[in-house]
Length: 49
Image (tube, rainbow, N blue to C red; front, side, top):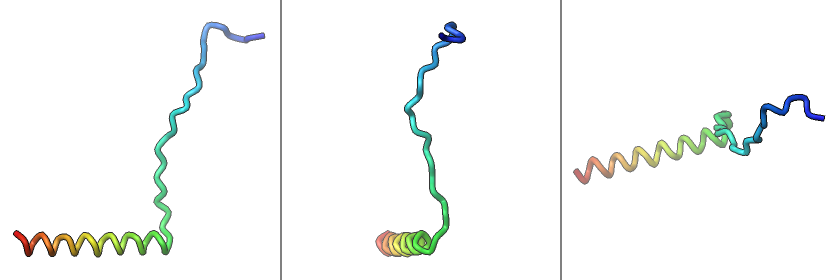
C-alpha cells in the first residue's frame, strides 16, 4: 500500500560529471608531455608570425 499518492517520484538517469584529478606518476608524465607540445606549438607560432 502506498504511503503518499500525491507525489510521483521519477527516477533520474542523468549522470553527474565526475573529474578525476588524482595525481599519479602517469598523469604527471601526460601533463609534462602536453606542456612540451604546447611549448613547441608556441615556438612554431612565434616563428611563423
